[in-house]
Length: 224
Image (tube, rainbow, N blue to C red; front, top):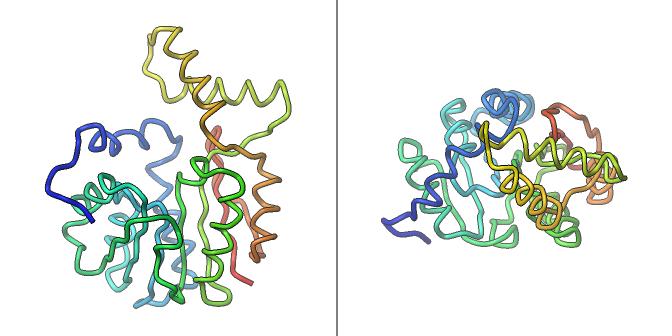
């Protein structure tokens, strides 16, 4: 699943989310609090997109009785997760692959943080259905990713804002333009309304927005 060597470009991932995601310092605390409303003290949680291990570490530290299964397709990112969660490794199982590689559960809760904007639309629908299938009835899903209006000129304006927030001050304008182009062409971004509708179609209800930070949105939803 992983080796002793993690390339530096993957190690640098741990520095990215705090710089690129407004309110990142509070995000894991909010997710843990919302999950804990329904997850028992000895509950089992599925973490989708677990590479890097940041949310695994935060949740395991806050909830010493929870068990975790994390799934991610990147072997290098899973290796980084193993390093990140060393103090809690006895309570975490990591699985290489997309959602199909995750155990069938049933889980008391699931998370997918900062992952869905990397997944093509058709796969997003299937991923949500697979997450739903692995949850107990009424179990919560915390979902956070890039989401903003898709009509112009709003879409281009939000892309520019997203690129500017994560960029260092004084960046070469050409590099900033390249970042805007990459965001607009390489990521799968839907409007908040489309994201909520996709959750409903996958079988989730009681969908509530709990996080909004510039271009990012986060929802808590429950398996019907």
